[in-house]
Length: 237
Image (tube, rainbow, N blue to C red; front, side):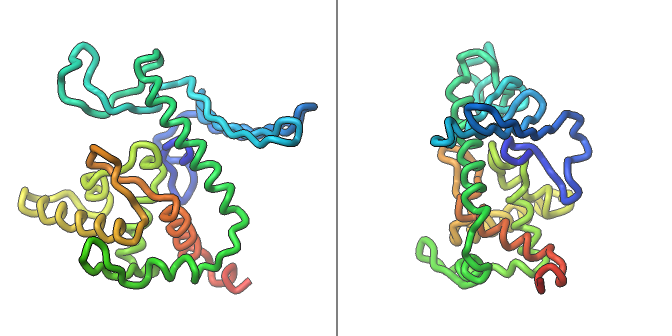
């Protein structure tokens, strides 16, 4: 779900999702193939003749994806996130989405047997750093506030299109009562985004107000959240 930019919860699939998610494995003469299908879109990996490992993303249902463009018929109008078109008009965006999905999949494969200790990953974010000439405090992943922030930016629906200040406000704060409170919440999120950028956990998407996890951020945040939610019995083992 997350490789293709869809939302998940601690219990599994999001409650509003009514599609189909299937993973299947097949062994053929040419090699082994594993496919993860989400409705009509999928990521698959296979080895060709046992010598080349290949990962590819196939997008058949473009309406599950979005592209930043102006509305059809209003080419000079303001741009916003619109549904991806199936024709050649949005083929560049389709290639970007597919490549990003491939890279996320390969990156997660690379960390399946990660020999680094949790301490090694945590040290880089738990100590204060200097970024753009200013000091940024260290993160405390065991503290409730920092853990909520890490869980928010790590949500699956942000994997493809990224997240904005307003997206995090809706997750971390209650609905503002007035404009003054809304501005105060926005300023607080801006400080949190700066903190995450200072530690290299997120990066800004060029020419937008959106942010995405960095490869380093995905490794660190997933490791810290997994450890935070693990039982003491599992950690002791």
